[in-house]
Every structure is written in C-alpha cells, then in structure tokens.
Image (cartoon, rainbow, N blue to C red; front, side):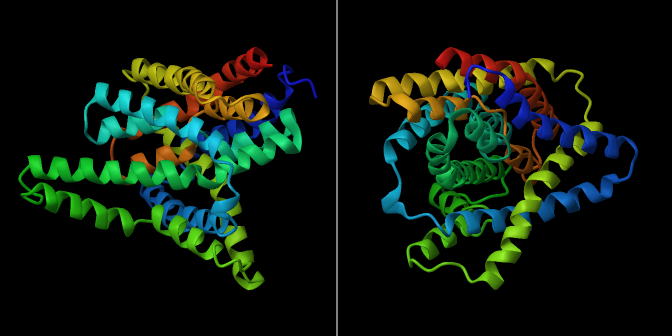
Length: 316
C-alpha cells in the first residue's frame, strides 16, 4: 500500500471516532446517568485494564526486545514530559497535562494503522513498543502522580512530615496499584516460559477486548457532560504537543541515536497518534483536569485525521 495515502489513517481512526460519538449520544440521552460514570470508570480501571496489561505482558520476553527503537521513543517522551511538567508545575494537573502530551493510543489506533500502512514488519516493531509502552510510561507516571498527591497533602498539612515518609508512601501506593502491579506480575510470569492456561487466558482475553470499546464510550459519555468553554486554549496546546511536538521529538531522537529505516518511521508515527484513553482514566482516578483531558482525547483524535496523514506523507 502507498503509505502516503490517507486510507490507513481513515480506516484506523473512524471506529474510534464513532465509538466516542456513540458515547456522546448515549450521555446526552441520559442512558448512562452521572452516578454510573464513576462505577464504569472503576470497572475499566480496576478490572479491564489489569486484565489487558497482565495478558499482554505475560508473553513478553525481555531478552527478545529490540531496545534501540524503545530508547529513541522513551527518551524523547520523557524529555517532553519533563518540559511540560516544568512549565505547568509539579501538581496533579501538571502531571495530567504532561501525560496527555506523551501518551499515544498505540493499541486502538496504532495497531490497525501501522499494519495497514507498513505491513507485518512494521507491526512487529510497533508491538515491541506496545509490549512495554504501558510498563514504562504508566509505571513512571503513577509514581509521579503519587508523589504529586503526597506533596499536595504535605502542603495542606495532611501528609507525612518528612521527605522519606512522602517517598515511602508514594512507593507503596505505586506498587499496590491497578496499573504497575499487573504489568510486573505479567512480566515475571513471562520469564518462566509458560503459556497461560486456556481456562485463564480466555477470560482475560474477553476482558481485554472489552477495554477499548468501553473506555472510548466512557470518553464520549464524559464529553457529553463537559463544557469546553474556557478549555480551548489548553486543549489546543495539548493537541499541538501530542500530535506534532512529540513526533518531532521522536524523529530528532532517532537521528541522534542513529535509528533509521522502518523502525524509525514506526516510532515517529506512533508518537503522532492521538491521546490514549488511559490518560482520561488517570484524570478520573486522581480527580484532576477531567474536563480538559476528556476534551483533549476527542480533539486530538479528530485532529489526527489531518496531522497523522501529514506526518505519514512527510516521512514517506
């Protein structure tokens, strides 16, 4: 397939947009009431995501990972994350915006897009990133979120009085958490070389398959209750950072590290993907910037129809 064609972008983005729109309509019709939104968020965050992460990581062999594309991607992502956090300030809202600027929708959009545009070889490179994307970003972001929460508690006179107490509380909250814990458990299980028994794998697969659609519907439901008045400036900033600045940073990082060819291309395209739904779930979990993150997920997804096509055309 001609990679400069917009067809892969349209094919991969259209289902995502339709699910968000469906959730928006459902929310407007009040088929899902306000009291149920938090319960659905807990279902996704505490049940569906852990099932997806454990099952994904249970087949990852650390020694088989190609580390150079990962080094290129994450070095750029963490530099941009640090810059946004430094500009916004070290608090929950700043962490949420920094996460939105670097966390890509690599599964729902990235997998079908890369497979259509670059075939099996490109998909193998992307799956290497997908296998550790959540492990690296979400684990680090969880630690930063917990440190920000502890810092705010200390400032309010409610938390630990010492730096060590704050750090220890953040570490405990990070380990006993529905994101890093299943990732680490799955990764440890994978090193045994055992396959998951079918009676365990099948329920995990069904739960994992439910994550994407329900999370996107939930984004749409929340959007139906979100007033975008006063959010356009910050939403535009997140869109520019996520859809344009991050792929530029990853492209530059690849040049500096000497990554070339299809792996470099796939990393840049992955960086240009819109904001992933996990960011919205983190915002709900930590009760911060929910309206802004929700708007950013929708706007970056819509804008990606143009920005992703432009990025693919430029790097082709």
